[in-house]
Image 1 (cartoon, helix red, strand yellow):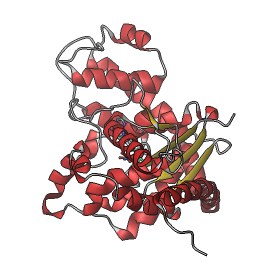
Image 2: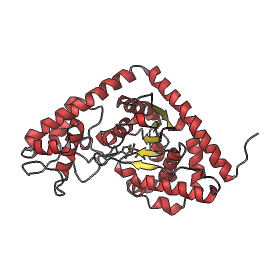
Image 3: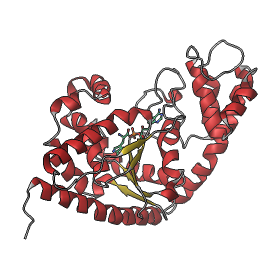
Length: 335
Ligand code: TYM
């Protein structure tokens, strides 16, 4: 029996933060041996908002190195760069032609990002979820580990696949419908400056997030200044205390302690006692990732060979699906 297949992606825009790690990459790593895994740095998605050509390639390599440092095991995982596998762009075009425009106009992330862009909204930003659907469907993925914010894009991916199969796959199903893999805890890590808003790469305030490569000193400063409340004693599950929920959850996930142990430990604590504990747990959890990252970037040839091998494996699978899609659509095969 072949293993079920996993595909996920991450954009090379800005530094990776605790939300990316706890919501997504940790789920790529945990249980990776059960699956055949494809992970890509989605540099084609990165240009759907204004970008700097001078840093795109370096950012792409950096994100690949950080992802690897988080614990991907190359015995099970293939890591590659989206733009290196041209089938992604080609399938996105083909899927564009069967995706109703109003499905894309309804996407929450499009609406949120479009507001920020004002007059400068590109067609690519509207089309972002179709390219994401192409990423996933090319690999006939069974599962897609993502944070909560990507749930709607996953539903759209399933809708696109079902529509394609309905229109062009009556005799033989062409595209597999993937399931999202979203954890109960860590799927929505919140900002350090506002517990009701998602931690995000695009937040202009550096204080709002902890980046995976932040120094211990920076982590300590950010946690010292992070928003809390005036209540003594810390608790899970109180909707009036969003910062408390977020910071306790971070402590739980980064320390690796069970939730009930954390709840009991922190029940009577003041923020002044809790913050150093969270700082210590965060630094300890990120230290091995940072050490591994330094070793990886010190050897550029290694990273290049990982990405080359990943691309070769990815291309073989992606090109096979692309051929099936083109055949179903009635394209001629080049002589
Ligand atoms: P990106 O780079 O914006 O986010 C990468 C992953 O991090 C998760 N994430 C979070 N999880 C919890 N709390 C947060 N505050 C938080 N912020 C981000 C995201 O849910 C995501 O899983 N559209 C994707 C990239 C993509 C993709 C794909 C993903 C392109 N093609 C195919 C899966 C499959 C994205 O949001 O990237």
